[in-house]
Amino acid sequence: MATPIVQTSLFAYPNYDAILEAFRAENRNYVYSRGQNPTVEVLETKLAALEHGEACKCFASGIAAVSAVIMGLLKAGDHILFVNHTYGPTIQLARHLKRFGIEHDLLLDLSADDVRGALRPNTRLVWLENPGTMLFRTMDIESIAGVARAHGALTCIDNSWASPLFQKPIRHGVDIVVHSATKYIGGHSDVVAGAVITTAERMESIFFRAFMLNGGILAPFDAWLLLRGMRTMPVRMNQHEADALRVADFLRSRPEVRAVNHPAFGEPSRSLTGHAGLFSFELAAGGFDAVRRFIDGLRRIRIGISWGGVESLVISPNRGDNLRYLDAQRMPHGLVRLSIGLEGADALILDISASMDAISAA
Image (tube, rainbow, N blue to C red; front, side, top):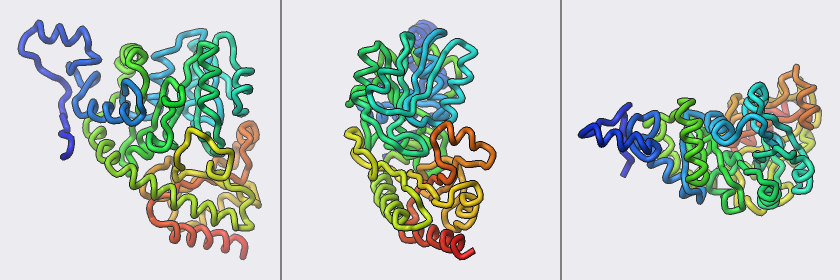
């Protein structure tokens, strides 16, 4: 029933000719677990099937997957266009890569025409998030993929929020899908991992030019944890969706809340077939003090980064000393992000209500 854990660093061969033959196609043979491992390969096969891609490679973190795409497919002189609010470490990586000649721009306007106008002659990759980090605005990924393709650029989307269950970007013309498998694929906050899904041809470049050289490999036991998490992913995602919508609806009714940022309340996205448990809202009072008082007043919802697990989490992009960054990103100062876990909507609503009531009474 459960996939065996092949916990080995290397694989022995019966004779020298056999291992030489394996070396000639190390991306398709078991030679050394830095390359291929049977347990990890089972996970990769399942993720590729879920995303309707030809090939998948798994990594030791989501940012390792992101870096493999960029370093495996781009070169000095190329340009990346990031569309929508993008995962912070991805942008930090792009800034670091400027020293190696890879340029980038950030675009917060989301129409296909906006993307067309922001493309440069040397744009080779258009990077998407649907919805985007923190404000959860959606876009028409199919139209944007068409614009990029006509320009000769690839599209890559971080599909961690929607998971393979609620959005299948390759069906909508996107070339590459990346995941922080730490989130909903794992689902239990006990493993850090990433994945890339694309064509077999592109994956060969990623494998030899990035994966094998960077060493960000996924351990067999971590692959087993992800396989275990995938078995309950449909049940978990449906519950995350239902409870998050209930909490979001409750927040819309509170006078302390100026706005709720949830894809269900915004422009419909034809590529999304469901909604995850992650969304944000803006406190009407705004400012760092209001954010801190609300977060510190919670008892059941834990304070922590990341998301997608069983336990509900809260965080804010407002750290008190980064207001210029928030303004540049068009993020309100009273923004709070919630990851709704599996404790039940009633308990979470009571927790949020108690914190807001205490602030109002102070």
